[in-house]
Length: 112
Length: 112
Image (cartoon, rainbow over all chains, first blue to last red; front, side, top):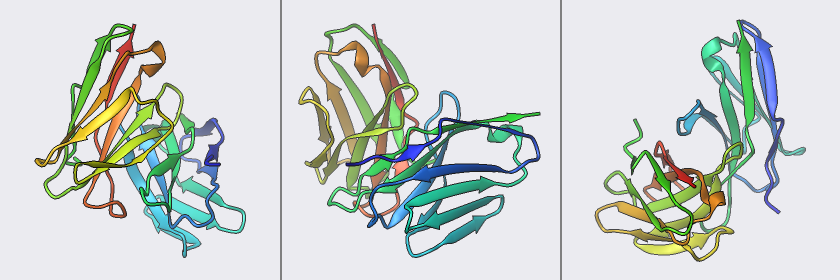
């Protein structure tokens, strides 16, 4: 079945690194995504990784992909209070619709 | 700014009523998908339209229906509203199914 799993909560101190983890189900997924959602807002695309990559870095964000274990992680360096939000991992279905399958989200709280 | 506009941003309906949510996509975006995000959950795929025809559907009952128009606008209609239909509804548009997705900010529907 389709099930993307994430831990529900993460709390870090300002300036520390945050690591948000995700496991996905479809080993044939070609694109995997991280989205950020602030309270009352829609989804903001943070970054994505193509399945033939192991790592992608974009400023403070580092994405690691372990295809063997179907594990994806997002590391945020020097976490700031403005990073407090819900983070969603998503895989793109490889069937005809290419729909997105989202995890339940990880709520990141950054303590000053 | 994603170029995808949803209206209204918020609305309140009574159980049993019908509702129409609207989405305006960028010109040339032939694919539109709708997602439901219940409180505390990740977005769930409702259905997708390509060139005005439905080409994929998630696990939602037939009282959820949609339309896509030649002017790149679309609608999500929900009949016989239930309390559990309270959610954020997201519109996603793409040029075609496997190209970059652009998310609207969502319509927050409350059913009382």
